[in-house]
Image 1 (cartoon, rainbow, N blue to C red):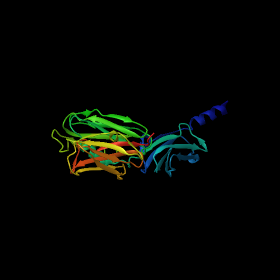
Image 2 (spheres, helix red, strand yellow; image 1 turned 120 degrees about the vertical axis):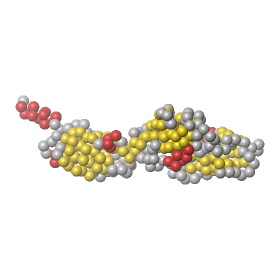
Image 3 (cartoon, one colour; image 1 turned 30 degrees about the vertical axis):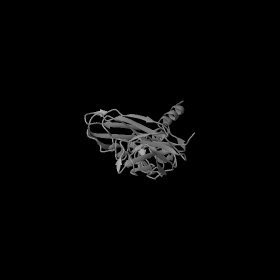
Image 4 (tube, rainbow, N blue to C red; image 1 turned 45 degrees about the vertical axis):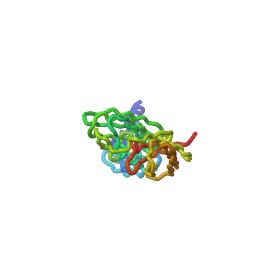
Amino acid sequence: KQWYQRRVRARLNLECSCSGASLEGMLVKEMGHLVVSYNLANPRGISYDMTGPSKPTLQISRRDNSDTLNFTPRKPGVYRLAVNYNGELLPRSPFTVHVVDLQHFNLRALQECLNTVQLGKEVLLTLDTTKCGPGELKAELEGPMMMERVNVSNTPRTAQLKFVAEKPGYYKLYLFYANIPFPSSPFKFNVSRKSSGKVTTMALDGEGLKIAYVGKPNYIYVSNVPKGTGLQVEVLSSGKDKQEVKVLTGTSGMSTIEYYVNSPGVYTVYITWEGRDLATTPFTVPATYYE
């Protein structure tokens, strides 16, 4: 009976705990830090194994009853740190680390879209999150007087933000993915009472405003177009690659924009007349395969 009690007591002490900011999420290709604490008289039997989309090298620094682990994951995803003692997995282990990638976003296009926000008009932003890894996008909008409402809708491929700037002044948009701030966040922009100097006499219509299909022609229709060749269109991928675009001039002031996209994702559409942006541009369009 005494041997049995000693055996149970020894196994109850065979457990560990883990702490560190990396447990709350971290960016890909940045160094993570974890501290594993334990209560063992002889820690030489402890070993670590981290599994995930890549195999990070663990740099271990040992002190009394704790080890500090440094590692650099090369791909986004879910990583798990197993803590073993003499080949046996310790209770409370493995520990989970979520790694995300926020480097592929076209932050320039996002800032340009925010610079065109007009007073009292709804803003719709679509971001491609397919390469981010596990997590969801969250947003906070700080207005001139207080925090403003912003709606976020997450799907497996994209995240959409909707908000309305109700008052003139300076705004700050804070973006987070898996609770990690975006690079360059907060995004700052000013909303004025005055006109933005954009072309407001031309209207846009067509399914190509809302969605684009890979390898298929996508159409946007522009009405009230003056005579001439001043209508210029550019469609860019999140990696700033130009897509194929055709502008077809019709009758009665109607022009047709035909464009193609190479792969799924989110694309930014720029439409100008004689160097001036149309009132609702630039804007983003999600792209997928036609089903």
